[in-house]
Image (cartoon, rainbow, N blue to C red; front, side, top):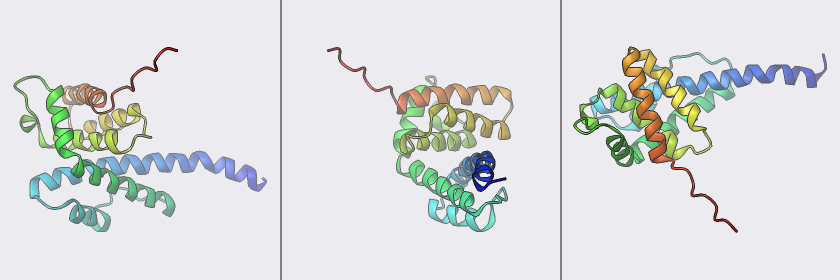
Length: 170
């Protein structure tokens, strides 16, 4: 096999590792945001703890592992920096009488993590963000809560990343 064939054959494997790494970063991000809310710890100290002690997945490629840590860190930074905006948007999409503070803290963390990606990672397609966080919700909740999370995430996306205005006609 030529070097070109080996590189092409390994590309799907690297892409799969990259996806798994980001999925792990998202799950870790929700857990970290939950921990921050419960303990009052800073995102920096939580990020350090996760880096040193709580990695949930062994990743067999050092470069991909670095990308995972970058995604995790950017997710936390964005969630903290944009928390007020994200929380307002979530409150806006929830039904009257159900403010964010009444929502399960794990769901709050999930909405903040997804909101961070919607606001600070515009290259990540919204469907990817929604699907990934629905999968995270499935790790913690039954079908009813997962459907609820899916509906809120879809509305949150529309709130935080509104479609650009149409081009004026010539």
